[in-house]
Each structure stands twice: as C-alpha cells, then as structure tokens.
Amino acid sequence: MSDDANPAELDRYLDSLQSQRMLSPHTVSNYGRDLTELTELAQAAGVALAAVTHFQIRKFAAQLHGRGLNARSIARKLSAWRGFYDWLSEQGNLKSNPVDGVKAPKKAKPLPKALAADDAVHLVSHANPLKNADAPAQLCNRAMFELLYSSGLRVSELTGLDVQYRQEAGYTSAGWIDMQSCEVTVTGKGNKMRNVPVGQPAMEALRNWLNARETVLSLHADADRRALFLSERGTRMSPRVAQLRLKAHGQALGMATNVHPHVLRHSFASHVLQGSGDLRAVQEMLGHASITATQVYTSLDFQRLAQVYDAAHPRAKKITSK
Image (cartoon, rainbow, N blue to C red; front, top):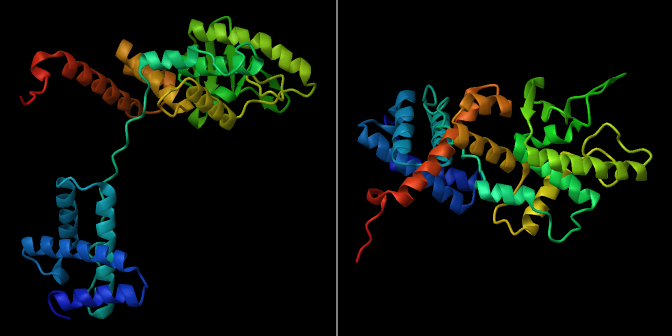
C-alpha cells in the first residue's frame, strides 16, 4: 500500500460501498463528501491519509466542532472515516484504525420548556370549557394540575400519592398528602423521600376533589381507597392517563404549547427560581441528587432577563435601516 490513499483508492472504496454493501447512490455520495473533507483536513495538516494518527483525528473532530458543526454531523463523519480506515486495513498493512475510540462532542442538552407564569396560572386555574366543571373527573383534573404546578412533582410521584400515610401488611405508602400542614411527601428517584409545600390554590382544589372522590368511591365497591387520584372507574390514576388529560385540557384552552406534566414541573422550577434566586431550595423541592441538574434553570432565568433587557434597554435595541 502506498504512503497515502490516492484518489483511485477512495474511488475503489466508494465503489465497494455500492457494489458490496449495496448502499444507495445518495448514501455513497454522502460518504464521498465526508471523505473529501477528511482529505482536505489531512492535506492542511500536511499528513497523508494513511499516516493520520488517532490524535490528529481528534483534532480534526475538534476543528469541525469549532466551525459550528453539530454533534450528530460530526458523529456521521467519524463513522464514514472509521469505515474507510477499516477498508484500508483490509487492503494493506495499516496497523490500527486512527478513528477507533474517537467520539463526537456530546450533544447540547436542550433547555427544558417552561410556560410563562401567566400561561401556567391560566392553564391550572381554568376549567375545561367543553366539560362540566363540577364533574368528579374535572375536579380531579383541576387538583392534579394545580398540584403539579404548585409543587413541581413528577407525574409518577403525583399518581403514586395516597390520601394519607398507610403502612399495612405488604403495603407502605410511597407518597401522601398532609392537608393540615399543606405539604406533600413523595418518594422520588433513588427512593429518596422529600417533603414539598403545597400552595393554597392547590389545597383548595384538593379539598374540592376529596369531596367528589367520595362520590367515585360510592359508585365502585372495589375502588382503590388508598389512592388520592382516581379514574372514573375508581382505580388509581395512571401516569399515562394524567398525561393525556393534561394534554386535552391544554388543547381545550387553546394553549399553543403541547402541555405535558414535565412542562409544569419545569415551569414550577423556573418560576420559583426567578422569584427567589435560591437554587439550593429549588434543588431540594425537585428532588435532584445533584445541583448540576438544577442549574439548567439558571439558563432559563437568564434567557428571561435577556429578553427583558433587549426589549427595555435603549442601547440594546437593534438599529433598523431607514
């Protein structure tokens, strides 16, 4: 094998992708572009393709990242390069594949979506205009939605709540509501138990639901008497049903955002942080094991401040052409 992979060898490799691996012409064309970019990077570094080292491949990936290429595109290019070097190894005496062990930069985690405070309050405080607001199912919905936003619960924590703490043969409550202390106890990830305050609007919604819950219990002899939130059949509310009910509620109110329980959890965290600036308190209420998981909400808060600044500060306004 020559010291470098010449254009003829690149063409042979691409031909093998189409004839042996039966890849589509479009896919082979994409491989060709990725290998052309590898060739250009190697030439700029003054090194032959067959002599490229593991360190140089890492440097090439970093250069692509510095140009603004996203993680998925870089991962695709690395895969194309790795395949080419595997083929070169089969053709000659390439000792090792320089791409092995090289990974693309981690994908940037998208910021959690949070509703504006007015939108969140509108969502949880208004009844579905298409339903009877006094029906047990609607009172149950109102209590669930208020509690999700009031206390930042995960939907599994919400539906796992009991009316009160129970410890019986083979059963111990994972979560429960304390109506007197206005507090909810839940068991989160890692079996970590925490107590979270419940606001007055949520408490009022819970009282209304508990009255309606007695009606549901009276209609079903085999109803789950432990569970705080019940379906219309008297069974414990499932996370999936709670999710679907919230989505339908948001649509009925004309919300532009596809609302799901985690949106209310994010909204809770963002709004408490905006109002208090106490990251540790938000971490404790969310049940995050690490402060790092909670710090993402500081980015949300900064985004809000940046928007206010851009809209209000005279020197932040963009100059428009006349």
